[in-house]
Image (tube, rainbow, N blue to C red; front, side, top):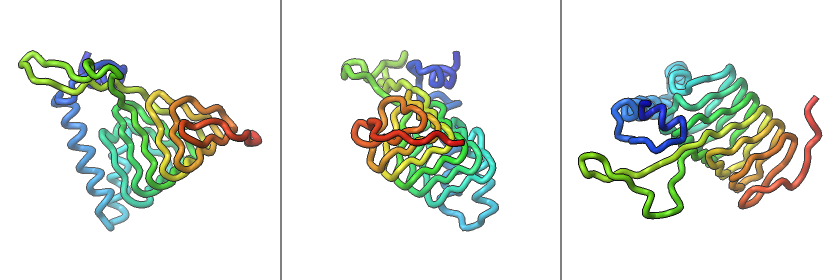
Length: 193
């Protein structure tokens, strides 16, 4: 099993692996173009090359941050506002018609609660940070408010509003509004027709 396959399976993996480092470098290059160029065509080309899946009508309004890029799968008519962070050490899926407000963070990685298990030792004696990953899945017709944090392993259903400042640590059912730290359902929404 490659280190990339281990990463996607949620297993302990070595982030120094040349394949992973190449993916990170490629992502940094594309994000650099997206965040600095004023050439619309070049920016759009970089966005299409960054994401693993990029639907029609994707808008990125401002700067973003991503780790691998190719682990991000985006549906149609998605709007991502500025200063959003995609720590995509696993698959992040955004459905269609998702709106993400500024300063939102999606974190797929996590570390052991037991501090003595946060670092491993390689064959050469050097230490490495042990990271485990889980995917994030966001359904269709979702509005994520500003400064929201979404943790790996979470699935957000369809027709959901996530209130500003929320920290989403558990799955969110369809047709709901969630808010708070940690996020909880505060209201139901009428299902979309």
